Length: 280
Image 1 (cartoon, rainbow, N blue to C red):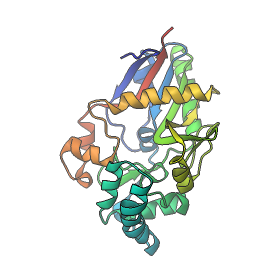
Image 2: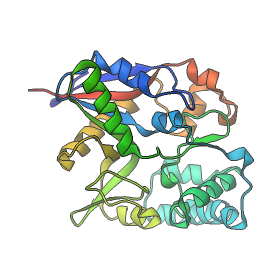
Image 3: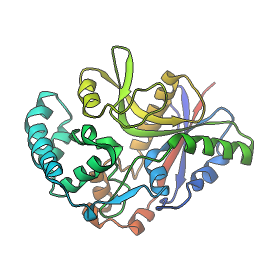
Image 4: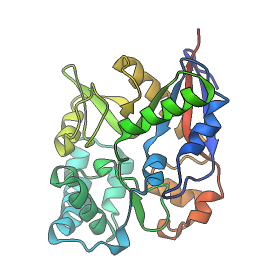
């Protein structure tokens, strides 16, 4: 696939299971790559490969987590703050229909990332409910900078091609008064991170640039990287089995999300990475 500036080449795999090496991404990309390409990888398959998963069915919510789910997110954000700040209608609808299981989800956010991230009404701290089986969720990848450097080095060693590896999260990078920032706990150098709820609120007054690069294998112009990340994310969102949200995952399999199994996830094609090549 092409756009006016870039050629887009999907890297397709099966479902990468928990604690399974992410090398399948490298193996399936190597013969498609050329020198100077950008290999843009979604954060969720990396996190799952690292075993960065939590079963929320085993998590007992605290009183604070219950308040955050039942009052703060469902009612204050669903009926007052969400409409006032003009967040997406789909998000408002989802907030108003938050299930009781959201209490355990808030507890996971509190435990791993703290209150400033749990105060976000949705997409807290980049914890991903989609592409994970049953009641599991995936946390952010561990040391994504090490991951992208490892991937780029393996490609260089295996096929003598020099590429830039990038791990991205679909949560937004914003720009306000010249500052680039994200609510996510981590981001690539050049983007201020760990703003939590304050980043989400400040983002309402800035502009959304696109998805957030978490790590880049070697220093690059950030404007270029943000552009490439958006091209890759836009492509992945239109793939046949795109599961950007947990609701998309439920629709894909026509099942309740907590009944989705690894076998179901393994039955479809996945595109964990996209090669972006500049058109000369």
